[in-house]
Image: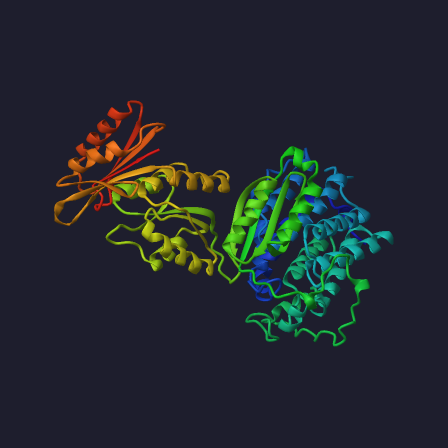
Length: 566
């Protein structure tokens, strides 16, 4: 019999359960990671499930015993917003689904909480929410184990069992389903392991039994986590060998599969290399039609990648998808931005590297200490390049990767860099970085483009603004020649030759347009007297008195003066 104090699962008890699950997943994470082979063998399922709960519990609003409904809702939302990886997002959705039933049944006093029937409803709601969140459900995963747990809990509740007995029935059902996962997924059978995410859910259910006041036996399925993925024991684990899967491929027919389960035998191999996880917040108006909007979003995301999960409720959702390359990752983010506000974007490699990358970065090819400092202060990264020492393909590749972003917008600021930049883009694409080369033939255009760069805002709008600004300037320059002479250029066309800078500069300024011009940027080459900047500024304002002039000292030495008007 269940102890009277555990006759119901209260809101506080549910919170204590999650705290214990976090501890259990922390201990189990290394073993879960070791058997992680589906949907990709990236060795992080246990870690992601633990980090999801850990971050969610740490960042949740303070528990308010006078308003447990708000406390439960805040906790579930925090866990959802902290979800990492495929299994982490599904686990968060399971918690969110169960929380809805807890909010209904937990009043926070001695008589409140969930009885056996209420717990069965909570597990059923959690299961339904998780299945709905996944675009292409698969048998042999955390979903089929969740369904088995919910079915077993319902049968126990129908028989009038207590909350502890219902929890124990759910654990037993999940454990049996976990043992069947290798029969249902060929990838698991080939690796001789059970599904890692499903095993993580069994860990959670075991702690549910303990929270409800019963002793939970060590689940037989968890012993199989002691294998190394090839049938041999892991160091420090006394794991039992996994029984061979059923020889009869028809042993499990379609009648035993939850609706929507995919046929894993015919599933094509994934070419995904990146995992995208982000938070999505809908507007109040969109939230009223969230079911239809999210269903459409899932469908469109499946056109871009696989392992698609969109979990949540109301305004707050978590999106997970595996994609082939960085450009597609950016398309995922752009698609979600059309649905609502996007935040906390994580893009990580599926090859075992888990370095978090920013969504986008701006990279400019430039030289000159002063100019480089201005560009960096405005938020751009810089790769050193000048007419006498242009960056090579390898340097562009290295600089793009060093940005730490999945999408890098490159301003070559030199027409001679366009072809090398395009080759660099092809090379970094194979390493999970989308290098987008924006037409920008001059440093003056690059300065104008960096001024409108806003990575914190809408990324697509910011990139469009950068591209427009980069091509909107009319450029003038005085370039040094061998022998001390200089040449004046406007728009790449020679307008003067002279023995010194002032001699060529007058013709350059005279050839620049004045109508509709509002801003001028002047870059003085390294080693030039600062007074030259005042001369250029005065000359420009003589032609248009209201002109705003910005003077930057310390540009490339090959150009004593660069002028851009826009």
